[in-house]
Image 1: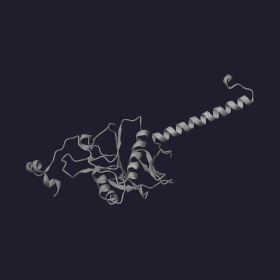
Image 2: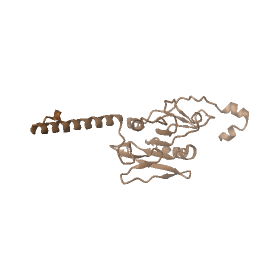
Image 3: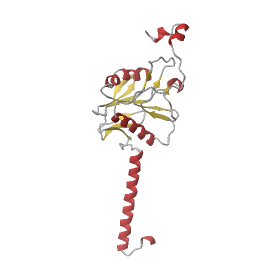
Image 4: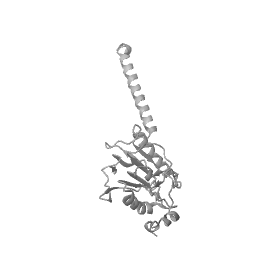
Length: 233
């Protein structure tokens, strides 16, 4: 029976339709494997670190998106493995409730394929994200097989993205590339640089300081060989 038929009369509204509160908790199952969990956390961590000075986005994963104010018990919600909403307040949320968020849907969604979810991710979910969410950028990635594809919404229809010479796919919404690095889906800048995790960034900074220290020590030793006091320079 269609929802339209369900709500033809006030009696049907009262009997069949649940009007939920706005602070709904997420209702998502655990991710399929540890690989899927690692991948989701990696995407969140990298984007949060890259945009650490921004407060106009919400990036999360495995969190329910409720998108019908006439919420039924098991209808009209989805829980993407990773999604980003732009132009919103950066704050913790129990779930993403569209009617409490100025009608905003995700600007980008990434689904992590598995044997049990791949068919739905390539079919039903893709259709919902295209026709109902109108999400501009949709990607999927399989952490096991490394299957990777992306789509951009053009005139209401998802069009496949063509990889660049490095095999990366461009996200217009994030102004970043997606690419595979060490069997993980990662972000790349428009210039092609890998977007680091906070840990990778800290390690890189440490290495740069160590190299600078080594160069300084070599220079000081060379000056001493020439009977020049480095402290007098």
